[in-house]
Length: 201
Image (cartoon, rainbow, N blue to C red; front, side, top):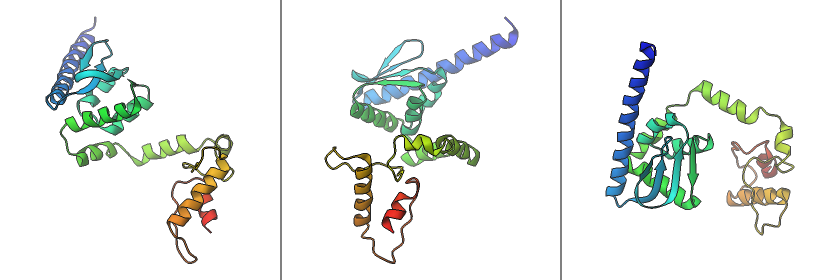
């Protein structure tokens, strides 16, 4: 094996051991605070318990995620799950509660965790994210949005309404809650193709 491969392998092993120790210390802090019903499964199949019989299991599929777990945030955990780097089993409310306690056990102030998450954003990255999300043509959105193509949740009072009726009920509800009157101004951000503004007018 070439010398640089040996060095790289040794370095990865040392870094991996250090990361594993930090995750172990995080688990110890959680257990010291009463524990939680969480098991963490590492890529090699080993399992780390956080102090109680597990109702939530987080299985790490991507070893590169391990350093992130030494200082987890709800954002990084959510992104890892969406990206398929982390599998989660358990009741959704138990999962959320477990993730919140895991983040809280890190000990860093919430403002620092939010700043660390948002610091990764750059104009170029945001532009690429927006293009990926929106530059796919209206035909796709017409498959599942209402006639106005309102891009936010609808208001189903009974569950029997059509998507069009539920979206109109939502628009009406918003306008009534805002007590809109002639001469008032309304800033609509991110609700789709202008359905709320047109309805409000």
